[in-house]
Image (spheres, one colour):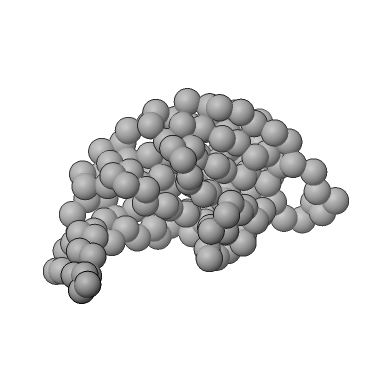
Amino acid sequence: MYRAPAEASPLVVVTCANRVVAHDRRSGHAIWELVLDENSVHNGCVRCVVEGERVVVTSTGPHKSTFNTEAEAVVTCVDYRTGQRLWEQRIHTGLSSVLVVPSILIEGGQVLVTTGNKLCAMSLEDGTPHWSQPLRSTVATTATCGLAIPGHAIQSDRRS
């Protein structure tokens, strides 16, 4: 039996520096734009995943302290069609801000994020933290981590 091809998604989401922009797939016109923390310390290390009607973005921001340069992984969830911010979680890392590059995967209504020294799980619906576990590494020069679940993986700088 012949099946019609699946309808293409209406928006293409692009992350660049501290901005997330959704473009109309047919015309290329920008539909909505989200500006992340203007104090972002990692312009260019922003990642996003589209899951249903939600876009979840990870970035690195400064920990709110006057006397240190420690980083926070920032997880922001927005509505796919409107770009309206739905929730945000900040995960303190205790690591240097130049080292943290969060990785993200989503499955079963749960957002999984690595921060270089932690693996965290939170609700896709509202960002409620589920749990957090420390990660151990013998290398202190980078805080990028691969993350995998059956059928999906992110290897520090690429998704497969």
